[in-house]
Amino acid sequence: NPDLKIFRETTKKKLSDGEKVLGDRGYRGDERIVTNYDDNITYNEKVRRDRLLAAHERINQQFRKWDCLSTTHFRHCTNMH
Image (cartoon, rainbow, N blue to C red; front, side, top):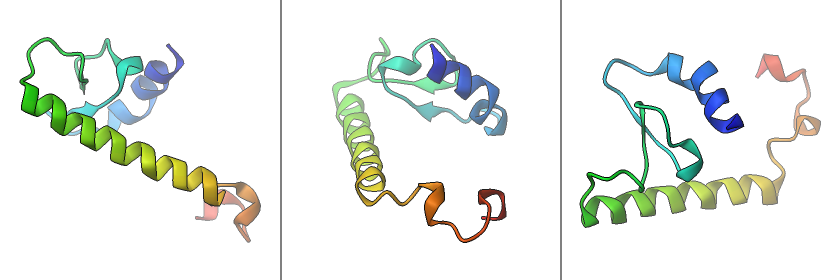
């Protein structure tokens, strides 16, 4: 899974001890990632995670809509931002 590989090579190394991240189905398989497909979560926790994931997706949609992450919008090379 490419997403899981990227997580393990980058983001995971930046987590504090005991810190976990919320991911979708594609991120299952790492002890530092919680998903809505975990066996031991309550209904209320699943609803909370659903809302968080939906909010994240809305933000990603806006970034794509506005095309604000494109390198063409930077006056300098991206490593200066």
